Length: 99
Image (cartoon, rainbow, N blue to C red; front, side):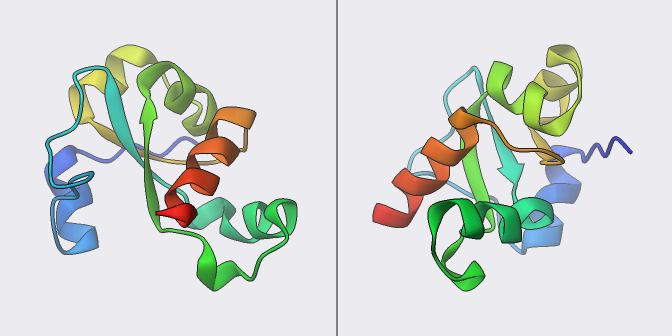
């Protein structure tokens, strides 16, 4: 099932508009909610699920794959929920965990 969130609805759901390192998102990136795949990510990264961040910033093309949506819809909304994993998602989560 595909899930789309408007950027404002996504921000409200998280309680704040996420910024990466205090800066606005790059033009071709989106915020991906990884909670739906957090357990799978934790197993893959060999960590406990509580160490997995709730969101990560991904290039729109990578986000389209893990959220199973089109680039056009992502560019409009700026956010989505992950429904699958990819190497790009795993890398972004790993980097986010390192700080």
